[in-house]
Amino acid sequence: MATHTGGLTATHTVHVQGLVRGFGDRAVLNGLDLRIAGGEFVALLGRSGSGKSTLLRALAGLDRDVAGSGLVEVPEKSSVVFQDARLLPWQRVLDNVILGLGGPDAHERGRAALAEVGLSGRERSWPNELSGGEQQRVALARSLVSEPELLLADEPFGALDALTRIKMHGLLRELCARHRPTVLLVTHDVDEAITLADRIVLLDAGRIAVEQAIDLPAPRSHRQPRFLAYRESLLNALGVEE
Ligand SMILES: Nc1ncnc2c1ncn2[C@@H]1O[C@H](COP(=O)(O)OP(=O)(O)OP(=O)(O)O)[C@@H](O)[C@H]1O
Ligand SMILES: [Mg+2]
Image (tube, rainbow, N blue to C red; front, side):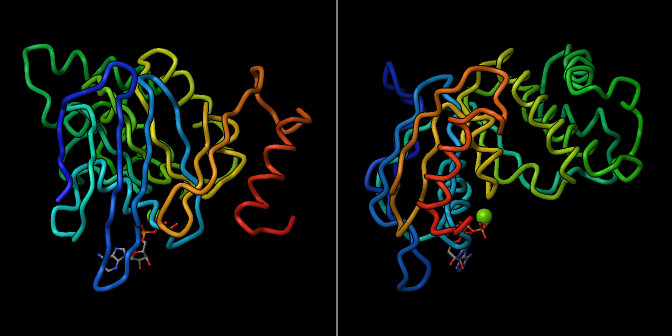
């Protein structure tokens, strides 16, 4: 089995080497190597079924039943955000945010996190009184309130409409600039990856097949010629005709 350890190297927060994961006799991850520097924002692209969620789950330590081998080193403090907010419906919004957070200042920290995602005043609401986008903002607040060193996000905006998604991009960028976690964001959306990431990695045949550093001045927009060039080469690598 993979070693899961809090031991960090000086420059890399995430270190994956020779990671193998499979279901039955089919290997999904097949000797995958990946390093992510502290504070770096990496977006993970790949076709449906290529193993993105399998990799994320391995990093999150959520795959204890899955057969495999290889080295996985991640920081001790990590948080995961999924496509659906996964809030506990019987807990109010603030209680969802501070779930598992100890200490006398938990409520205060939870309120501050909700303020950061623009949800001050909704502390006592129930999750089902919130829109999908608002619930996802609660999930972001919950994931950041513990000040994780590593944020793992699996298509966190996949279920949101286009406009809400663009707003969430701005919010995530702001939050990351302030808290500086290392981020691995799984996404289907090439534009989202180019908008947010320092580096994009593409998963194919069980390994990282393409790595692309994104060097674009802010604010990033598809009106930038280089944005379009990145998009074209990534879509090509994904085998998508534009
Ligand atoms: N619990 C499981 N049991 C059996 N096979 C599984 C299991 N989880 C994933 N797989 C298989 O492993 C492969 C990779 O799945 P994974 O969910 O990692 O893909 P993905 O890249 O996240 O896809 P998507 O973009 O559709 O979310 C798929 O072929 C899937 O059917
Ligand atoms: Mg997936």
